Amino acid sequence: MDDFDFSVFAAPEREHPCDLYLISPQDVGGDFPARLKAAVAHERVSAFQLRVKGMESHELARLAAPLQEICAEAEVAFIVNDDVAMAKRLKADGVHLGQGDGDVKDARAILGPSVQIGVTCHASRHLAMEAGEAGADYVAFGAFYDSPTKKSEHRPEPGILSWWASLFELPCVAIGGITPDNAAPLVRAGADFLAVSSAVWGAEDVAAAVAAFEDALTQG
Image (tube, rainbow, N blue to C red):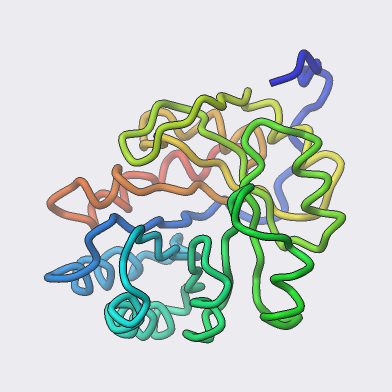
């Protein structure tokens, strides 16, 4: 992370509420479809990302089918992590690209103009601006906190969200160890979406876990 002074940027007045962007656990079989249905029933869930590593593509497509249907019924965007080919195969609403997962322009050429493309930008202003210039639909910053889901050496300041929201129209997503107890500063800083995983799927009652974010989402 650079030494840029983010304190000069105040979060702009919010034009829409902050929403939740759910990221799947590794295991999406068994009773997970029922858990997903309970989670996305909450009106503040806007997107669901299928993030399953190391699975054969036909099996992943099979497991994805009911999850995609649940998201469609709830009007929640269904996003595929990392895999442009799988996103095309499933006719997903979007794909999320890490820094090593391909180019935005190439993904756009394959997926077409209507598919949402998001990019992981860690704690980098430069990567975020590059993603925006390449045609991304949103940028993701993080990890803001220690995460049991995915380890990251990147630790941006919440102020990077204020900087981005002050200067650019593209939505920004905050990610990394976010819980109902630590989410409010990120919302106040200007996050358009909070990407959460273990805080929801680690709970026995996922509907209650989603609802627990309500107070934090009204900050700002």
